Image 1 (spheres, rainbow, N blue to C red):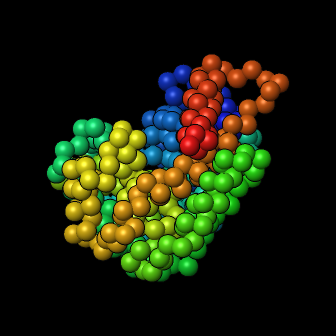
Image 2 (cartoon, rainbow, N blue to C red):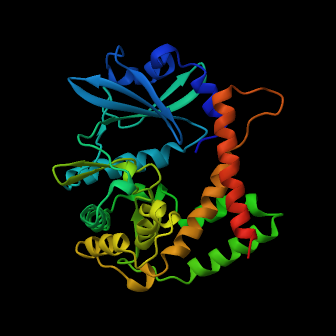
Length: 328
């Protein structure tokens, strides 16, 4: 989630029907006609959709103060490499200068832009998935991990790790005794976990159902924006986090089907997979930090109604996490 002040600054420029002159300016290096360009959404990044040669494309851009250029370059290089390995991904499209990421100076500041080719297929909600879907979903994640283990590009070092995420969270929990105690518990627990090549590496981090496109039994993968160095078991936990929020346990048929599909494609450390709830606690701590960072609206300005609703929702989620940690 980006800072709400950044979201406000950019969304205020979006006109009727989703017209976005700022996005059109950022898209110029790709030499695309902007007549079909429409603003799509804002969350961790800004996303616009447009058509080119009869195919859907997406422009993703972010304020330079939100994400380091090196991390974005590392992400899109990874995605392009995965596509060459036969993994079905939303491929990055080079600009007219052959660059996968373009940095554009605008009246609103500096922005980093990437264009992705849209994936064919449809998305399923987790609640719509049958056990066969969970098995295929797990197998897709296992294949992804098996591929990423072979990735050797030095740029991958620019992607964050669990230690970076905990370090990011630390300033937001200082002065909160229950949260600080949880931070120390998580740091101690994670430091003791095995980190061999079959257990730890570069993961997607957000392999939820809304980042998958299903077509004729094949699964296409979206959004490597949060890819990070973690345990492979953490990626399983984060993929299924909505299921766990609804009360599913490790023995549920959906989870077991997912794990069975995964294990057919990549080694599964059963000791680590038994600790999926702990990985979800680690995710909760990082999410708390991201939400705290995002909630930066100035007190002396009245935000528009849509942004006030976003702010209220984020504050409720953050408070729910704080209460879950504070309650024995």
